[in-house]
Image (cartoon, rainbow, N blue to C red; front, side, top):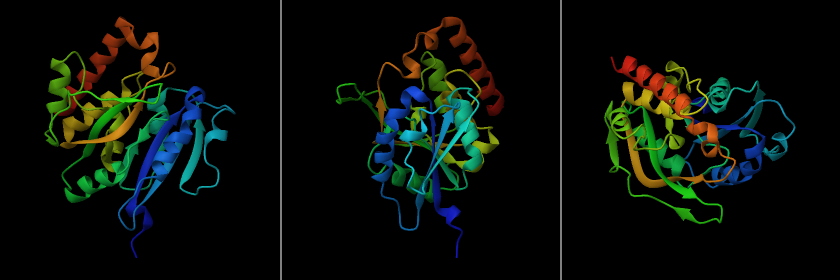
Length: 248
């Protein structure tokens, strides 16, 4: 009989106290996922720090959910620490304040299982606004494969904006480990991983919506420091240099 871990998708969520109340919605979206027969998901919730504020929001009676804490270092560090508790062939990222759409995990699995050369997948995103409404945009690429290097080329030519969203990433675990997980940056650590993945392996973009991306005042990308010109320039520089080194 095959090891159950061979048919598991590990879902990693980094969380800190302000975003903890949104974990209930993330969990609900996970429970609504329908996976192929024999497959299961494992939700790894990793707190960025030690507090008493997060644990009460983590389901305590579901064996598919594990909770861990660690020294604060930002979401990239928390996600990379969570890799220690993964065991399946695939890793899906789910931010604490976001929600998966129905069928998202099954679509990721179908693509990665069908093509051993495919390293990662991304999907379309709907912004989830504070009033509960959603909003999309028409800048997404066509549904289909993304060749090595195309995400970086677009990112470089369009003001350091990628044409696919890193918050929707699903990737092979061994590839993620080989790249060292998420970048140790104060922000844009997920974009750095996306570009690194695209530098070494082809991916796939699905135009079906795979994520509800919550917009709220406490999210990291809404903070003033995220747009500090000096820090942003440094972040983009190290992401670009790493990507070029991997491409070469």
